Length: 410
Image (cartoon, rainbow, N blue to C red; front, side, top):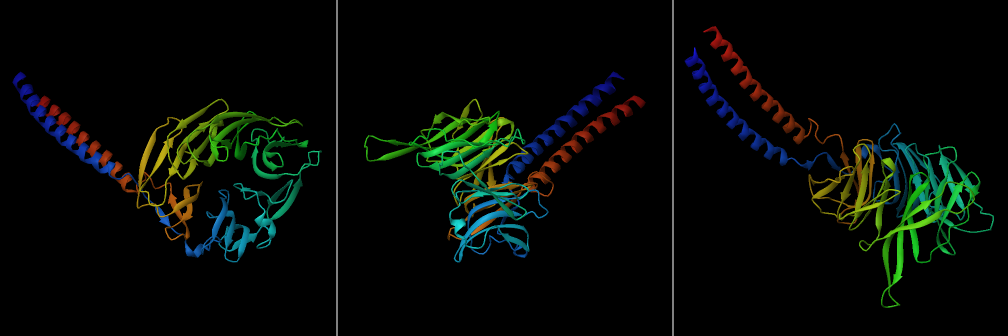
């Protein structure tokens, strides 16, 4: 009996070492193959000619926003410039294109602020002291009067999303004193915070608890008084309503980067801002800096990660997990065919608008659902790797049990 068990164990030991050796080879080969499928699949250059996008056919896009809460994936609002003039429009289907104002109206050339939300509501400013809101094609104007007869243009608007009743907003304005910051609430528009002639604010977004973050350029004189230099500046802006001007507190003046090309709100009271040399993760209490170069950035909310894009011709992109700070390089199917100007994520699609090497505008789209799915190379290899591994281990376990039962019968 003892000799029988000893013989079985010796045989099984040899079989196990052989199986483990084969499995190790499979792991190495499988890992190599999976590592070789780091390409982003599903990149499509151009648009479907049957969908008749209004921005197609050689238009220069000045502003564009997509509407995710629409029946048509391509629904958007935009401002275009072409050889015939300028157009501000909305498109909700291939055949449903509506001008917000008449074609080449002088107001389009005077627009200082333009944005639209997921439902298609457009907000813009083309006149002094005026905010225009367009809902279902119907415009309405809000005239802002601070009681002092001040005249100002509106460069940016950020809304306090924590309280929809008060509807508090903070505005970046351009006025005689330079670049100002005003509050807008139920009691109207406030006077401007004291403008700093050395700072020009360019963008702002809401963080949390009546706190906003603004970015702009700080202008300074170098050793040569006739030569001006500029640096990126960030500030926290606090305003909870009322008639008092918002409080502006400089958060940081950065030594790197020419200017912020993208600033986006993120979840949990954070924001991200990217320059050509760095990316900044900002909260109401802190600012965190990462050395990442890019020409465009977009935030993917469902995965809580940032995508960074380089110049035309680059062969990879960088993604950063905001929670952990982990950075991952993803190879593109082919070299980036566009110089990015706008990068947006709507639903399961990522859109890159830009210019090709001939200077012609085009759009590159990416289906975000393909990565890791069975229809992608990496997803198929992952499935094959797991299936084969489980099959090999299961076969080995079955053999051991079967031979143990057979030995007992003897």
